[in-house]
Amino acid sequence: MPPHLRAAYSIWRGFGSAPGPQLQLHGLAAAAASGAAAATASPSLHTFSTHASPSTDLDEEVVVIGAGVVGLAVARELALAGRGVLLLEAAGAVGTETSSRSSEVIHAGLYYPPGSLKARLCVEGRRLLYSFCAQHDVPHRKLGKLLVAASTAQVGALETLRAAAAAAGVPLQPLSSGQAQELEPAVRCAAALLSPETGIVDSHSLMAELHRQFEAAGGTTALHSRVEGGSVGGSAARLHVRDAGSGETVELAAGAVVNAAGLHAQAVAACLQGLPPASIPPLHLAKGSYFSLAPGALATMGLGGSPAGFHHLVYPLPEPGTAGLGTHLTLDLAGGVRFGPDVEWLPTGTDPAALDYRVSAERAAPFHAAIRSYLPGLPDGSLQPAYSGVRPKLVGPGRPAGDFVVSGPRQHGVPGLVSLFGIESPGLTSALALAQLVARRLEEPPEA
Ligand SMILES: Cc1cc2nc3c(=O)[nH]c(=O)nc-3n(C[C@H](O)[C@H](O)[C@H](O)COP(=O)(O)OP(=O)(O)OC[C@H]3O[C@@H](n4cnc5c(N)ncnc54)[C@H](O)[C@@H]3O)c2cc1C
Image 1 (spheres, protein in one colour):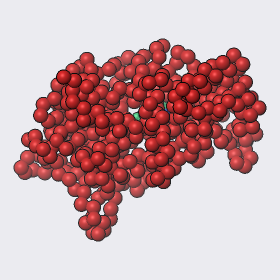
Image 2 (cartoon, helix red, strand yellow; image 1 turned 90 degrees about the vertical axis):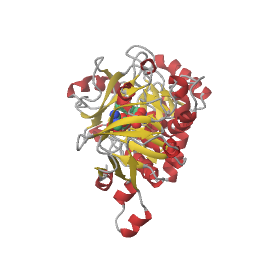
Image 3 (spheres, protein in one colour; image 1 turned 120 degrees about the vertical axis):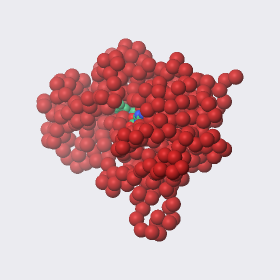
Image 4 (cartoon, protein in one colour; image 1 turned 120 degrees about the horizontal axis):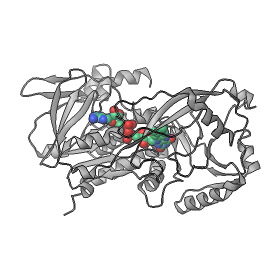
């Protein structure tokens, strides 16, 4: 993240004394602004009364828990709709957890069961995201993806995928082996599909722009602010928020709450009294590690010319019974090549607050084998451990992946609360569509 943004995110916060504890927060606009004129034009010092009594004003106030890409998109959506929004983030900056550990791929929406939230929100979210990026200068590129059948035995599976994608309104162009090789000379396959709608995005710039718009619309961010308890279902929600600096806990009242805590969404839901525990789905964690290509490997593969490297994302067919999309090749906006993520189920009960994100070099051997099925020229020893992320899955190993869960009053019976569970891939692609869905669900009354 650029240093000037990091500095801007270091938002000052503290606690007043009278008439009771008060949480004072500067918006990003104020933190970033310099000079009296800018400060006058952007009076974004907000004071939230804690232990506030329920009021009409309070009904307009929403607390969003978690400032990953989804919480940021939700907070922006609600602030633009005129709600007073407080965004609480446990870490010292926005977007430091799963949202900064993804492949940064804008998915077309090929893989998800028809009618699922993943299928619908990926397609809607992709359209919204391309338009948002173009409108607000967020770096991105619609470079397309090759989906390759490594052997003739897999060609039928390509056709099945193409038919399912067409039914979902996602175009895929069939390619012969030769046509695929023209696009990517180092790739070998029996046949391929080209997905022209797939792209990549600079996720950090995206989150910075969402955050900027949120605060420009009057929203307020509190970093170092972890929700540790509270209650929902009364005339107002109450949240216990611990300040990481002082260790002090304050109680906030809010008209509505959105739980967008990612890997910690189940823990946050479980600490809210008044929410039926049966409405909280189980959590299964699946780590995904990435390897990058060592310097010089492109030249060894004959890809050192100009323009150098790969020009499309390259995916094998998804492996049935596994929780990932196969060991694929993705690119960043600078043309850097990385492979992954693989799937490593973490033991049941692993604490999402104590994850080990290191990538073991020992995992390189299965990566080499999987990648060579479509990239036979990959040189020995050319993979370097890069980074990893952890998927918040709702279904464990060996079973079909679960859908996103956006649990609102109709689902759990508590007014003014929406929780997001299982927001794994394609959560980045879907973030803007998820935000619109959350805004609608927040308004729903519980079932009679
Ligand atoms: C390996 C991997 C690769 C992926 N690749 C892609 C991809 O290419 N394309 C795509 O579309 N999607 C991809 N995804 C999915 C995407 O990254 C996620 O769906 C998305 O980032 C989830 O965002 P989030 O805001 O829900 O969660 P997070 O980014 O984890 O944000 C949650 C935030 O809540 C905060 N928080 C937690 N508990 C509390 C608390 N008690 N109080 C206050 N704050 C709290 C955390 O600090 C965190 O900042 C990938 C995911 C993984 C794991």
